[in-house]
Structure formats: C-alpha cells, structure tokens
Image (cartoon, rainbow, N blue to C red; front, side, top):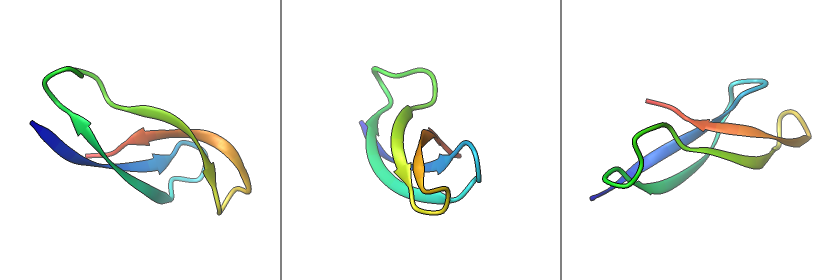
Length: 49
C-alpha cells in the first residue's frame, strides 16, 4: 500500500516536495537530500505527518 508523503526541509521547515512511499516496507519516516528553494542549498528533507 502506497501513501502520499509530504517532505519538509529540516533547516527552514518549508514543505517543498511530495512523493509516494510504501508503508509496508518502511517503518520510519522517509529522509531524502533535496534542493530547497528557500534555503538555496541541498538539505535533508523529512516526511511530515
């Protein structure tokens, strides 16, 4: 079962990206290194609730 996951920047907190994640295979929150338009650099983006 795949669910929509919203990714938020760990530095500024802006919600920039959305993706799909498989909840059966993944117990913890998704973390990806993405470019943040607000910060102007690549930062860790974490899945929000």
